[in-house]
Image: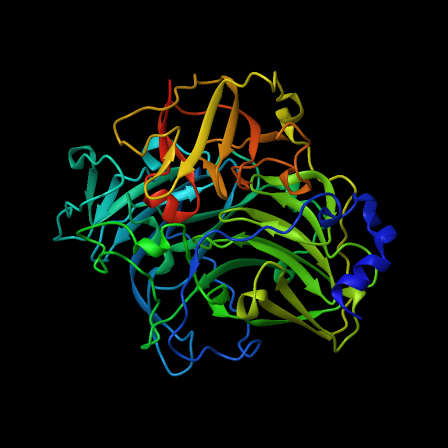
Amino acid sequence: MGVRRRTLLRLGAASALGVAVPGALAGCESEPVTGKALTSEVPLPEAFTTELPVPPVLRPVSSDATTDYYEITARRGGARIVPGHETEVWGYNGIFPGPTIESRSGRRVVVTHRNELPVPTTVHLHGGHTPPDSDGYPTDVIVRTGDSLPHHKSPHSVMDHGAFDVATGRRQYTYPQDQRAATLWYHDHRMDFTGPQVYKGLAGFHLIRDDEDDELSLPKGDKEIPLMITDRAFDGKGQFRYPSTDPTLRRESGVDDDFMDGVLGDAILVNGAVWPFLEVSNTRYRFRLLNASNARRYELALDPPPVDGPAFVQVGSDGGLLDKPFGHETLPIAQAERFDVVVDFSKYQVGDKVTLINRIGAEGTARVMQFRVTRKERDESRVPERLSDLGVFGELDGDQENPDRDFEFSGGGPWEINKKFFDVNRIDAEPKLGATELWKVRTDKHHPVHLHLVQFKVLNRKGRPPRPTDRGWKDTIDLSPSEDAVVVARWTGYRGKYVFHCHNLEHEDMAMMANIQVV
């Protein structure tokens, strides 16, 4: 029985656990991707023959009464991704994905990031409520010991190399962690070169935990698994294939003209493995989903779907737990978005194979990974009817017809915000510390819009209610062509300079970014 028919047979069953009608049945339609695909020049592995790797959890090098201290080095490493080849990665500690940091809300984290790569790097904790000097501003770079800052040519952004803050060898990032439990991730954010450097492997998970989350009966331990979904293509030597104008990433930024809409690969990787499989018991699992692709968005579904109930029970979003769970038949996920979901494999039989598919992919990009139900186990987890108190979330509202700021994302190499491409010295918004502001964001094509420093609440899309996947605290909103949305955020914590931008990384590198100065 196919996915479509099985879905139609159980429309009435989707309200299990008190969750609402699945997103696919609530007006959330499939949407095409924006970008151009590269084709791999080597044979790709057969699907579902590689076991899913899970990134190692990094331990602090030291701790004191208030702070945990970590050290991470960006360096070259090798990975067995395609048969017969070792792929060079630029990874944190030489691996892709980088090691996972697990920290506690309210307990300070200090990470010393070292750079041993031949290009500058900077590190952004995506979703972090972070002081400006530790946010990974694009020109706050680390150069390798013995190197100097390369003065590259940027045909898109207004460059001022005198504005670069250059650290040699290492830089210390301080994260106060004055925020709730959430799935964050850290990645390179170098000015004009974020796309190729993330594509080479500079990305990893950072999970914040707190007592509220710990006390829930959600799946834990080996049944809580982060899944970083990316797409890549490989050249004839098994190396990552990327269409940089300058392959050295030192002299000129940008990509070949055909790829200005975004770079897509033909192989889907999960935690750095192509189309992997995971053996599971017939119990619930909690998956922390992250789309870390440069330009590809996905619409995830299970094939076959469960015989009853939703495929995915969402318990969290970009900024942590929802107030209550919500069910989805399919899960659209744009670049940089995170969804914390529970999948109940008791709906399947031991011996079943369940494929995580991408309904807006084709051929190889239509499959993501496979789950194999191999054993029976006792399951003491459950999904509570109530998950979290979202704090001031319900209080954030306002005159949606008269937002405080209006930003249009448009163009095409350069990509622009309000008809301007990025200027490192121009301030585009000056919210006051403690102020609540409504922003209207508009698009011409697909653009996932990301705000640094704050989490926001989505109030509407084109004057209509938000999508089911807009629930909870967000830091990234995916906008379709000719769509607009109103979001509201409270600018708390820190004064200073931050950015907001499109998280299609090729769009970001080609100037679709703007400055915020919290005053």
